[in-house]
Length: 192
Image 1 (cartoon, rainbow, N blue to C red):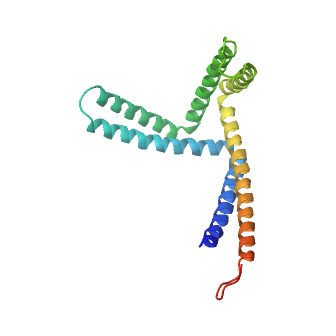
Image 2: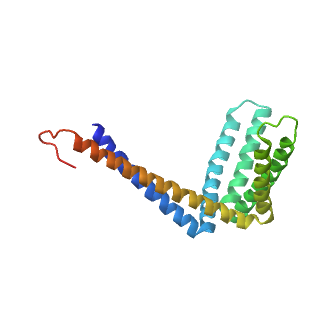
């Protein structure tokens, strides 16, 4: 029974690794299209989320809760429409907001670094602030290219994880073969 699980496990790891590696290569080869697809998928999720908020607004009691639910539902539907029908605009906007957030984070980290009792080592806070600030400036200054960079990073991470899964699958197969060869053969059992 355990050998059957290991046999399926190593195969699934290799398949998962191959899929991740292929996705990573595709994401890096076509970064604009990758971001567009991801934004459209996010838009579809926002559509479902908006419909859910609106449905909940009908089921809650009168008052502020109903207005909040309806407002969130309407906002989600608007965001969904922009993401699905104008994905480049949505990707640019999200990248710009991310850049602004990174700049605010950088300033916060610098302020924390020079407080009387910083929550982390001062040098790490300053380094983190410099990295966040640099990335934030790049994102705010050119959000379109920054979105392409995010697709490249996503692709690179997918390739790395894909290769890790393939290596794990091969290692699991090797362990399976060692386990199978160390067990005594039983009648009617096929060798691997």
